[in-house]
Amino acid sequence: MFATHKATTASRFISANELAYLCVSPRVGPKETAQLITPFHSEGKKQHDAVGARFHALVIDHDHDDLTREQISEKYKGLRYIAFTTSSHQQEVPPANRWKVVIPYGYSIDYKQHEALAIGVAMSLGTDAAQARKQQGFYAPNKLTVNRPGF
Image (cartoon, rainbow, N blue to C red; front, side, top):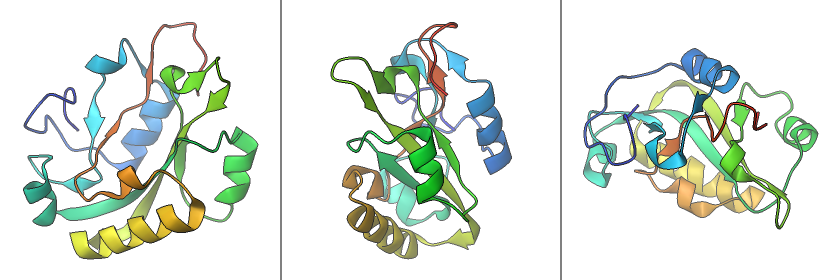
């Protein structure tokens, strides 16, 4: 986890359980100051860092399909996953629900295995292919204001 998307060095490493906790208790503040998470274990977040890292999760970005919580649940039925949205991803005009789905791997894999899985899943589900890039991180659960819904 990086303190913000501008940070160049990881501040700490988190587990899937810690990510799930962040979904229950999201940070409140502007998106630009939200923490950034990478699905791989490395001090850095650039492409060369990802190539030498071990990956621990598949991240799927439902940025364009406007699925409800129930539809996400049905789509990933039978899998161990974490799904979350943020208040900045719940748009009012046009209405849209955007989700990050994180599927922890049973064991760590290298970037080639991860990239093949990520690209294949993005293609088969029609999700945002940008998330399949090996160095791609994602924002931690975040709400713009305390009373804004989002999870």
